[in-house]
Each structure stands twice: as C-alpha cells, then as structure tokens.
Image (cartoon, rainbow, N blue to C red):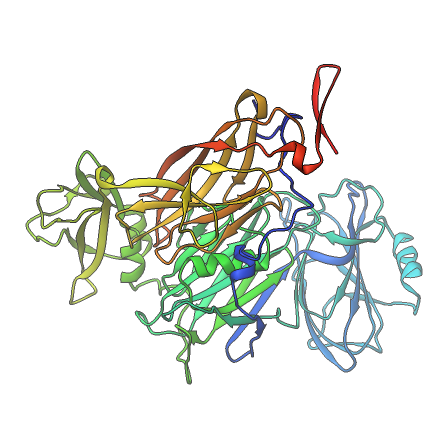
Length: 597
C-alpha cells in the first residue's frame, strides 16, 4: 500500500489537535534582533521585480525595453549596464530604452557598441559621463501612457518596476517569455533579461541560542520561492573577518527545491544546504545537500542541532542570483579593525585549509582509504611532496589522476576504540615549512547498536511498547556507544498498522508530517526525539503495529563520504478504548464499520 494513502479505517489527525509545548520550534529560544552593519551586511542581485513582464518580438526591427524606477527623495546614483551578444560581428537590431524616474538621478550608463536610443527626462537624469548614444526627451506621462508611447515605436520586449536600485544589468536578446504582448503584472521574475541590486542591504538579524555552550556560529540564508520554478543557481559569497583557525562556523542555505548553490568563501566552514552545492574553485563537483525546514524556527533548530551557540546572521531574501555576506563576527566575538581577507586564494598561492578539505575518507573491508584527486589539487595551485598517515612509513601511492593512501585498521598507527578507528592525514606541501594535519575517522559498525524506544511522557523515563489512541507517545532513537564526531538524525518514520489500518507517515525528509507529529529537541547526548498523537475514526481498531525509522549517522564536518543509514523498528501493542464509556457506538452499515458519536 502506498504510504501516502490512508484507508478509511485509520487517519492521523493533522489539522485540529493540540500538542503539549514540547516541539523543536517551541523549545528553540533565540530572539532574532537586527544586526548593525558593523557586525554583518548582506547584499544581493535578483531578477525578481514588484511588477514586470517579458515578451518575445523576434521579427521586430527595434528592441524596446521600459524601466520605471522609484527612488527616495533626493539625488541618487545608478549604474545601468546593457549587454548583448554579437551575431556575425554586429548587433542584430537597434534598441530603445525608456527610462522613467521619479526623482533626480546621477546615471552611469554602459552600453559599449550597442545602437541605443535612450528616452528619458533630462530635468531628472544627469549623466556622470557623456552617454554617447542617441537620446530623446520622454514626455511627462503616467505609466500607462508611457507604455503606450513606447509600444507605438515597437513591440515591448520587457518592462519592469524597481524600487531604489543601485545597479541594473539589462541583457538584450535574452527574452524567453511566452507572451507576445508585454503587460505589467505583479511579482514577476525577469529571468536572464534583467537583474538588479537594491541599494538597501538585506535585513540581517542575529541571536544567541540559549542552552548551547561554546563559540560556534551559524550563518543562515533563506531564499524564498520566486514566481517561476526553473532550475536556478545562487552564488553565495562569504567573507568573514577572522584569522585562520579562529573560526568555528556553519553556513546553512535553504531554498526552493529547484535552487542549487555555488559557494565562494574565504574560510573553511561546515556546509548545510538544500538541493546541491559546489565550490567556486571546482564548480563541476556537485555535492548533494539535505532536506531542511522551510521556516525560521526550523532553521534555528537546525543551527542548534549543529551545536551553534550564536546565530551571527539570519537573512531572508527573494530568489537571487548572487548573495554576498560580509561579517566581522568571529566565534561570537567582535573583531576590532579586521584586516581585509581575500574571498578566494590568490592564483599563485596554495590554500592549505582548502587542500585538506579535499581529502576523501573511505571505509570498507576493515581498511581506511584516503583519496586526493590531482585535478582538484591543481585548481588550488598546490605542490604536494608527501601524503602519509600518522606513521610516516605509510605513504600514499601515485595512481595517475589521484593519490591513494590505504591501510588496514591494525597498522599505520590506527587508534581503535569501541566505536571508531582514527588516524591522522599528514600532507607536506612545497609552500609550507610545516606539514598539514587532519583527523580522519572510520566507524566501527560491528560495535554500534541502534535502539528505538517508545515512552509515555516527555521526560523519556518510562519505556513502553504500548500506545493508546488519543494519548501522546514519545519516541527516541539511540546509538551506542555514542560517536561524538558523527550526528545521528531521523530521516523518516512510519507506523505500519497492517491490512486493517494501512501505513501512517510520521516523518518524511526529516520533517514532521502534520500538526500531530512534533520534532523535539535532541537528548543531552544528541539522540533524536519526536512525539505523535494517533486517532482512529472507525473500528475495528488494529491491535498491533510496527514503528519503523530510518536514521543516518552523518559526519559533523558535512562530508557525505562516510554517511551510514540504518532502519530500526519495534513492535507495538495498541490498546482499544472502552467505547461504551466514551459515548461512542459501533454501527454496521453496508458492510462498513463506522465509529459514530
């Protein structure tokens, strides 16, 4: 039976039940407050506009674009760039740009080699440099008449309203709209035709997560869905003013399912994203992300789950193409007069931190294998003179396109504990006088035990294997012995009630299914917890059920090379309530068993 379908015999109350205040959202105490620009600033470029349209006019001699720009009172500065691709060495057609503004603007126009006609109000627009284009005085018309005036000169390819833009990029010949006539509509995505950057930076908020020790900081970026749902890559530039080694941070990126991320950061940090992500230094290497909550409280819960004690920046943005984060926080501490740090390594300098992050750890057949691809090393301009384990006699092999270092768990200085096999990767590079070192781990799966427990109260003291309809049940998943380097997470859970009751989904994609399922704060040891409330509306009520949960052990570094997935289950007894005492009666009609009041 499809888990997404419930038979009439049983239903999980999703909309109208009230749970005790123990959900994750309710237990994450973090009072988000605006952060001053000296602590953090986020700017972005987007194609989302308050009103706009894009249409195709393939046979038009003149390509017409209209911009309605609203500025605050007083002179403003604007950078306006027009781009076009040459065909056979020439521009395909002339362009008319109609520029309507509400106040004085100093305009820096770039339209090199484009046969541009600019219509504007000369009393409001002042060029910083001679425009070098044909100009026309724009009549003082309202918006509807300006559109009519522009349409008389040629079919309008695009039109947009923008509020206080700092810069605008208009790409010619890029119209992909399905419309043949351009009519302004609210909340539009201009696609590749137009991108702009607002003058006012995004609102940045921050808070301290109560009850979490340490100095790990979280930077959370939430990108809201746009008008269109096509594949989109968001470039995220992160510049943190911290000295190497002083920062312990996680970057959380959440967006619609069609968004992927290209990350350009000047510091190593834990990455936690939806969709897929890659790094600017090797963009062809895509890494799969995770299913993340799509609410502020849920994302704060993710930060707490990742042991962050401070949310240094929390930002919600419209769908953007480029987002730039500049922050002076450093492990929850203010930095005075931070020195500028490059966002990408210089071309002739090797970045040891990024180099060590490229080492892949694989565990199989009672052996640990480290792999370092030469192509990625070359991107960093690094020259490696040696790769060994802690025991320098265990050296890597050169296998053409990669370095491979392999050892059994019983040699090369391996440290074996009840749950973990540990060693150290040591890399010697030409540009550094001292070797680079990184801890590497393999899980000892033979020694790990996963347990699923049901409890009768949120204190998780009294274990049980019985549930009663209408009574809240509490679930915890444990792994023993505990593994501090790995994070235990609930990926999915469901309750199988057999042929009479079908399957009830409780958790899917690490998210609760409905109001009667709540993800709770982990235990002090980091064990995942949740609660659920079950209601039956017809009889007979199933007497037994099977609770199944799929869990994942994920390295806290964010690497997915060592993810481990397990499914754990437990048999449950179901107590049928005494219907005679609750005012409910069992009625049989047309072969259907109904529960009525």
